[in-house]
Length: 230
Image (cartoon, rainbow, N blue to C red; front, side, top):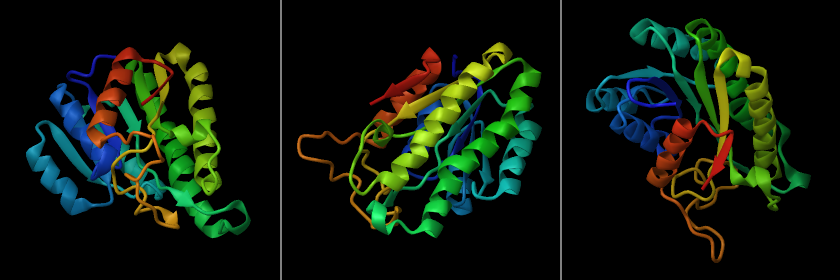
């Protein structure tokens, strides 16, 4: 799908990959709707990014998700692309996973994405199509000690996304999944449970910048590929 002149909603837009996406998509001519909890940051971005809209949104709040779609529709009249980027890490061995924390991470990484998809699908269907891209992780393709809780949310996200791709094909709604690997952001510092350095990487593993990831996500949107990774 061509990005130029498209209305794109980006969740988790105030930092990291989401913020890099806002700049990359704007550079490619998109009208960008920025969703995150950081209202002040979003309002500053709205002044900086042309043809943009800031919608302070807590993705764990179902009402906020509906409001995000409604404000976007009121402002631009349509939603061409939804990028579900908001998420949180969690690091703990299986035997000591805190279930309440796990539920909170699942709420953001899976349930909020499903709610956003369910809110935008009728809009996209009515306008004749659209594209949903869900940001997963390469940990959903591997098994890393300490990351079972986090990776399991991404396994679930992959299944929801790729099944929806088949279900919605006849409505001309494309659903894709992107798998970043280690990226130089504050993701690890914002992780639930044990904190870690996102840019540390493993021996021999390269660490991508958020800007590099954003370019590849934008390229995937244009290619409409089912899955892509760094």
